[in-house]
Length: 320
Image (cartoon, rainbow, N blue to C red; front, side, top):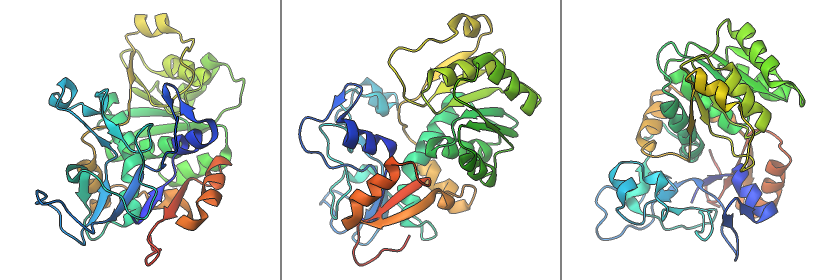
């Protein structure tokens, strides 16, 4: 292993021992945003050799069920997924993974970029589910790591205007640097309909697509009110199981509400985007720690400092 990013879900398992129905009942290795170097291959592996640099897709189907056959293997109830109980993750020195879910990195893509393909894939899957295309106007709720990768992908897919919201001005400043056309700082307690009006005033139109990355009830409400009739809301952020939303408002305006669960079939597109320079994820990495300082790295993420914290697992190579 070379570079492993820390995700909010890793911190959540560390702090709370569970996410929804996934409960940690025994010790578990964290980490699922990862890239490394091949040191050994199985006898049947033909597309990889020792020395290859690879990005790791953490979700591997265990059986060829209907979801696998439909190309939506992320929905398979028996899928193996790094750092989701009871499956161990890859925040370690050496790690074994299914070769079909290890993707060779081009020479001009770094290990850290390879590790960032995992969060980038959430953005790709969300934008695909939303139908973002040339000329789309897009609202993104939340400028954390996932909101920012959704921004990068939406712009790469041809979105003409993207407005992003967040509570914190420093995050909006990063979003602006990464290409957000408009930024809107929100406050806790803001009324959803009023926020939707502010979005329309700033954008000049109601967005075709809203990508909700916070999971906060008020933001989901805003997303629905803000989206134009016939538009799409994709819900990426995880919040409470029960949420009050203006469902009838969405129904009478034919606003589609679509869920997003991780991703599938995204690594080849992500690698192509990075290799071509169409997407630049390098600015997302704000902190680096050697594996020995994992506790400090997790604490940094827990405190919400910076954007993406990267752990360096290869003692002989601490470069990006």
